[in-house]
Image 1 (cartoon, rainbow, N blue to C red):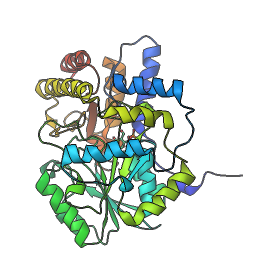
Image 2 (spheres, helix red, strand yellow):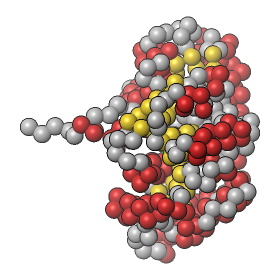
Image 3 (cartoon, rainbow, N blue to C red):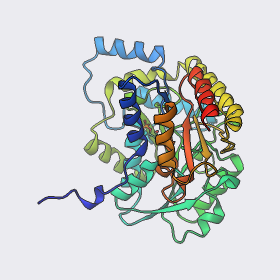
Length: 379
Ligand SMILES: Cc1ncc(COP(=O)(O)O)c(C=O)c1O
């Protein structure tokens, strides 16, 4: 008999399971508050929808060249000048099938089979799964509140010989960010130690304390991954981009051509307009700011008081050790007893996530108020 390849033996994405359980309860008539899924509850900006409609009527929507439409890459290049004050030439920009498409291309192009790649734990579960299935060894760096749940040079030094490092600022699930000094320390350490740096910047724009810092500002060799999914509220359009160092350009172009041909054309037409829709994106940001305030102010009086400092993204990572030692069971009870869907920490940190949960505040402010009310009454 045939079996799945051992490379496909990866952990489940628990948040997806939570979403499906929540949807089943809703179908059975329960009122469920969705604090599990990390996606905006708003559609793409109006300008994006208009550009896509125009393209549907006037363009044949064929393939594009593998690295993406020139206009799209020009817009991204301008974005780096405007947001970060740095020059990124369009030759170094590749449009990808969501940032998820960018990750597999980054690992395939830059890291040998068997490479040792570090990630912070807790961290986005797909990093582990992508790295493992592509034949690299995942080195988890246990991160904690005192380091804002981010990797540090001290931890990297202790990790043994490394070939790569993935960082995310703001991070999922903690929302914590690297400030300019911390980012510089990490990027310089990677440069001096010959460690390939992949910087996940998909939550840039959703930040509450200080501006987002790109790894490119202090390390032009970094591979940067970004997306239209979060700040521009375009998850289902499956469109993102990567910035690549010159030595990887040919490999990245060939890999994209062979794996994907090109990123979705209709989404490229839409995304070209996204950078002109900042006003709408900022309105969403105002809502996330309000939602974050609601949760940070009210969760402590609902006995959830050990919270990661949510600098950006739309997540609160809560330590629930005083309530449970089994976050999966705890989330199940939250769903069945008070209709709140959230994600157990084991999705992000298999060894220590039994005592943590992640709450997403990407939904409506009304839902956040109601969630706090239900939690106060229940806990
Ligand atoms: C940290 C992080 N990186 C990447 C992604 C993937 O985003 P997309 O493929 O939609 O660009 C997500 C999605 O939740 C995420 O949280």
